[in-house]
Image (cartoon, rainbow, N blue to C red; front, side, top):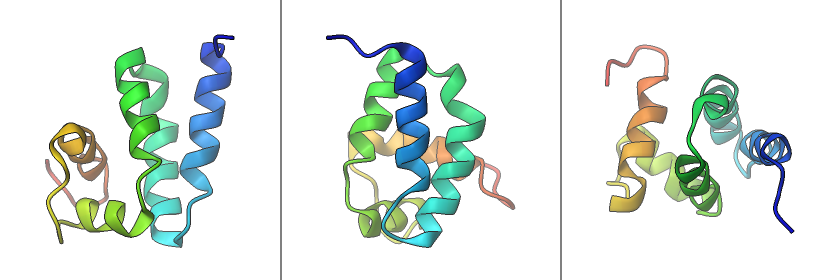
Length: 88
């Protein structure tokens, strides 16, 4: 059964705000609220896959402590670009 687009967005927004560490809750919730509605299906699939990654890895990628894997780099750059005080 195919997931309706509106249900997919709602699920991804919930997964973005209910993470394992508070920092990623805040970062991803803000990103999801401002960006998911305008994403293509391919970008939503990539974001969905990225949400399955470990929160500590995600935080290191977003904070620049470690490089993101190639499939996620563009998405991580989009997230970083929405953080306060960044110009990516």
